[in-house]
Image 1 (cartoon, rainbow, N blue to C red):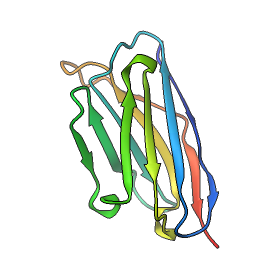
Image 2: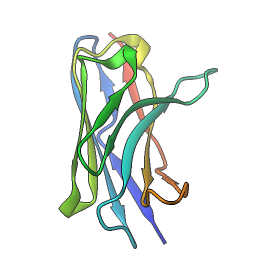
Image 3: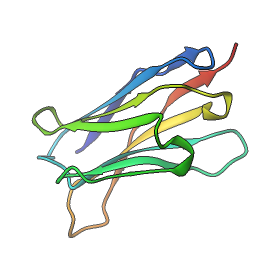
Length: 118
């Protein structure tokens, strides 16, 4: 059984920074892909950033240059460093892990709230 535990959300003023973490436990060794999604009220869940096992990354246009995704394979942990936060970044952020490249099986974290407000 795979479990994802997220941490690091909270309330921050516009222009501030936050770092999200997501630790995976269970039968995962160096997952094929790890990523972060977000869902704002009344909107669909969207991809924020993803990182593959080989280090290749992909970002939503809205966060390029402000957010950085990274991973620690030894700890099965993925991070999202967020800078220059804007009110429109307010959402519930979800960690997602796809353990194997040959399978579409993926797992979700419980979500962590990020609120950007003065």
